Length: 497
Image (tube, rainbow, N blue to C red; front, side, top):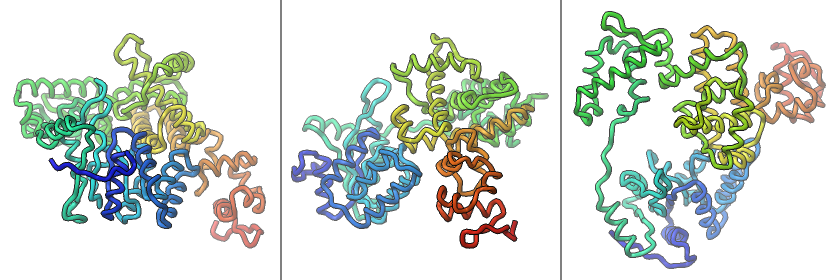
């Protein structure tokens, strides 16, 4: 283990290492354990750096990713102006992409990140500074695994960029240095375990194999799994057989496969579930929810049904402060839920409340709450919001497919309406305006507030008024979509419509 000494300029070891890296004309990653720490660390670094014209332009690009910049966007842009950035799952995917691209180009020189950046990226980071080797877990603060440490350290000095690199761990004392050396530099990486041992994965693969006609009886199914890494690790073939039989029985009970004359065949719904690649348990909960539904369902009811799934995890945490409020909400909307509320003494109750909080957050989005409001009220960042919305759209689509199979055609329009509202984050009253290309949440609200509420209103309004609301280019585009073209400020019927 090599001890790295740098001049103490600021008293902050990370910033001092960064300034030393500047002297070497190199770039660095700084790994910390939380999103908030990544943001604060990037700010601390930026205070010691100078602005550059290139970074000013990058900062503007980052500000303009969202329709209306959030506090997080502004905070990130201020850091980027000095060549420092933070990177975590709470950022919009486009912002993460900009940061990564500009780091490769050398414009952004320092990225403070959570360990999510440690896997799968090859970047010109000469140094990796690992500030935190502990993070909050089930038993309080826990040391990160050796494998994760090696992933982070492995980002330094990639062969295509440098002849060598430096991975530096910050220790607070000589004693801690020795402990870190023993644990991470001399320690053995943890064993890797097969994901097939996890029930959701196993039942998904069992259904996929039967659906694709790769196997059609239990013997062939066992022969397939005997050749897997899971079987190699598990060793006990008798217990493995019991586990797989349990999965098959569940799929039969749920109606996703049939067993006739000791042969398996996927049902129509089973095949579609395998194609959708959702957990069969989730599919069964969806089917049960659809059967509980009446002629109509509410947006909150649909959102809660899809949030109460393994696919949507991790769900939003429920704090002590949230508990009473969520119980009030559950009483208020009791008749809307398609997933029945368990007793508060059951183990599932906490997850049910978490799914309700997550659903309420998405419902707020559909009621046109902005990202700053969601951050303040639900502690969810824009990137996390978008990730949840994308997951929700996929699950709502799967739900619509199951509604079609279950002949619940009366619910299809309501599910599709929920998908559109979720995609754009709008109230139902704006849906007719979203049919226009180039009209999203903000422009639709502007039109609606100016008493333009549907295609008929768009046709009747004069171009000069529309131009004041949307701007000239957007107004021309909307008018063309209703069969008009604009010459000067005069509208004419378009020959192309």
